[in-house]
Length: 411
Image: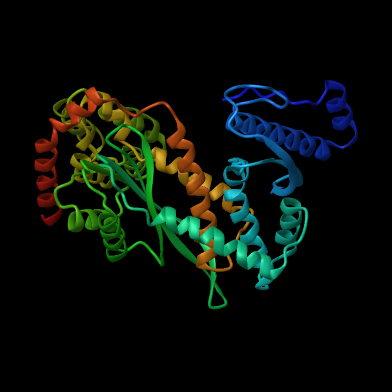
């Protein structure tokens, strides 16, 4: 990667900041992106401006201007031209994917008559200009293609760990505002890298909608799954048992702890939470069972409902104990997908109510695409191949556990 030198002096920055703070940020962003494109141009040509080099593969041919809409307004960039092979840049694609989704979704709200003054103000702040109906329509179509391509891509790798969850958004439908559930599958592949496998919108979480979602993932090529992680929604458990009957389910320990503690009188909650955490941190499932039995004996008289919850859900919350010890903390909760849901909610706050289901999928899909690019670019792996080999050695135990889970559910 070529080194960037942003040609903006300290005096210029201080002057801009003192006179026009918003303009200062626009100027800094504009200069930075222009320098990035100059660096990309030099890399593609294998030569700096005016440099004579035997490695040079093409020559510069002037430039042209192009506008880029950002959160801090519209900036004008200077895009290099090459004489023979067209100049390529990641600036516009990487920077504007989710921004375009946000802008076009809010513009669509205005066009369809569901906007408020607040939405109009946000639209103006983000765009810095208005969009015609035809422009919005064409932009939406182009974005829809990218989102659908990402959503429906075939899964060609194996994914031993898959976490699923649903989060809700307000959508206008038939002149009413309703809640739509966005189902998401977030996984780790056999190489130890995280990946968003897919997402889909449903009217609600039911056994049939979750079964349909799991079947859709399987049709896309989802394979090699060793364990599913989620909260204890009945629809999720049913869908797994119907579509992936030989894969065990790990109940999120974080949600499980909260389910138990909230059924206990307030003065006992802190102590019980500490004891449950000790149980989850056990080295062996036998040790965890011993602590569980002690907790039930201690709290049965004061919180019978909570102890019944602990007793009934314990085995499902301990699936990770079959895994190599290095993997247990990574997959005993669904916290990583909760963080993803938080990011989706944060991005959707500017919208409030989506004008239709398509606009919800468009914006949330673009955010998921952006998030996936981020996690795919990380060098850190969730696990390495030595640990993966240990996981493969546990396959039979996991399949047997899945069979035991099915028996518990039937009973």
